[in-house]
Length: 153
Image (cartoon, rainbow, N blue to C red; front, top):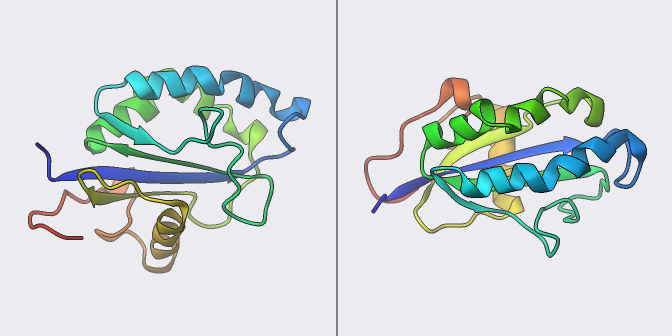
């Protein structure tokens, strides 16, 4: 069994509130994209509320900020989902649904197998990436670090 798994967070501020026609396409596609993630090789877990996604969670005071967090077996599995599944079709449209973001909107990091990160941990990883750039504690796809060799974070 793997000792380490890959956690990820990505956040974005919607151009309009949920229910507005300007973001309807995003919300219409969300269940299908989540189903692709759930059935993807290497998928372990994703943050969800009672609706089956995380769009009603409010980790900040901004009601239009959405959070997505998940855990994967490795960078390759997450990359395959993000860039080589139907998820990539949705990503190409993100500029019509999300405002430009100042700072890091995505971070990856290694967690002990079985760990499920929360929003506070995820926002901390985004801060680390903004403050220090890519490190083993927070990185992106282009600057991915290997899983730790020894036990512990």
